[in-house]
Amino acid sequence: MKYRHNYVNVIGCGFAGCECALSLAGMGVKVHVFDDRDTRKPNWDNSPVDFAGKKAFAKSLLRHELAILGSSLMKIEAEARKNGEILDSQKLLERAREKVKAHPNIQFFEMSINELNFEEVNVIATGPKTNNALFSYLVDIFGTRRCFDCFPLYPLIKNIDESVFIKKGDFLFLPFDYDQYIALINKIVTKLNEEILFQHKKPLQNTIEYYVLKEKDMLKKEAMLPIYLEDCQKPYAVLKLEKIGQYFQIDGFGSSLSVEGQLEILHSIKGLQNCILVQKGEAKEDCYINAPYMINEFCQSIRFDNLFFAGNIAGVYGKTESIASGLYTANNVFSFLNEKAFVKLPTNTCLGHMMQKIIKSNNFNCSKFEPIFADYDIIETNKGKTAHEKEAFLEARSKMMLERYKEELKNGKHV
Picture (cartoon, rainbow, N blue to C red):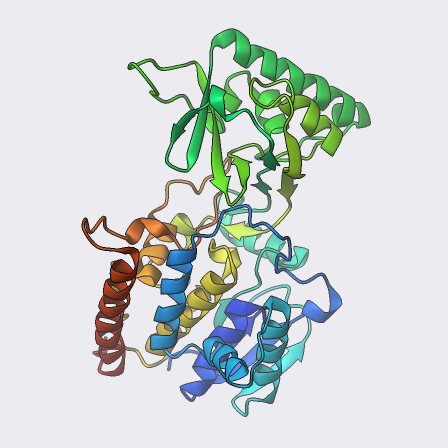
C-alpha cells in the first residue's frame, strides 16, 4: 500500500462512523476511530416528526438490503430483537459504540481532529455537528462553495382550510398572484426588521428572511417556484405543502423567526388563517459538503484519492441512511486498500438509487440544500400488483442484485 500506515482513520463515531469502522475491522483492517461525541451534543434527531417525511416502504427496503450486505448495526438490532429488546436510536448507537471500543482491530480515541494527515487513509463521518476547527479546515482546502454550514428545517402545521388548495397526491398547492405575493413579502420583511435586523443580526442562509432580504423574487425562485396548476395557467408564485402523517409541511419555509413571528406570517396566507404550528421552521447551523462537487459515486474525494466521506456530512439524512452510507464507504475503502477496482452499486436497489441521487442531485448549491433520504421513487408502478406483491418483488430483486454486488467485491479485479 502506498500510504504510510496499514490502518484507516475513521473520524466520527455516529451511525455512519460505527458502521464503517466495524465493517472494515470485520474485514481484517486495522482502524483508528476518533470521536468527541461525549463532549458535545449528539447529532441524532429525537423530534417526534421527521421534517423530510420518511417513506416507510423505502425505509423497510433499505433495511432489508443492509441485512443482505451484512451490516454490523443491523446485526446488533437483530440480536436485540432475539432477546425481546427494541433499540431506539440512542440505545442502538450506544451499543454500536461499545462494539467499536471492544473490537480487537479498532483503537478508539476520544478526541477532536482538527486537520487531516494526507499520508494516511481517512474517512470523515462526523455528521452535521462537525467541530468548527475541522470544518474550517475543510473549507480552507475545498472552499466555501463546496462546504457550507446551514440548512433549513421546514415547519409542520395542522388545522388548514384544504378547500382553497389544489391537491395532487400528497401535495397541496396554493397559487399566488403578484399582489398576494408582495403582501407576503412585506409581512416577512416586517418580522425580519422586528426580530433580526433590529438586533443588528444577519438572517441565516436558506431561510425565508434571507431570501426576501436578498431580492424581492428570491423567495419565488426558491421556496415558491411557480408551476402550471390548472387550465394551463401559471401563477406568479406557488406555496407547496406536503402531507406528513396527519400534518402538513410547508416546503422551503425554513426560518429563524420566533414561533409568534412565523405564525403571524402564516396566518396572513389564505387557507392558513387558523393553522396551528406543530413544529416551527428552523435554520440549523449544520455542516455539509457539496457532494456532487466533492466526491465521486464511491464516496471518495475527487481531489484526494485517500479521503472518503460517509453519513450525514456527505448528504444523507436519517439513521438507516447513515448506516447504509457507512457500510458502502467501508466496502469502497477496502477495495482501495487492496488496490482493486471499485464496484458500482446496482441503481435499481434502494441503496444504489440513494447514492446516485447524492452524486447527481442538482439540489446541492449554496442557496439550497436538501439531504437525501431513502426514497420511494425507485419503485415502479407495477400495475395490477398489490402492495404486498410489490414489496416481495423488490426485496427479491434487491437480494439478487446485491448478491451479485457482493460477489464482484469478493472477486474484484486489481487496478
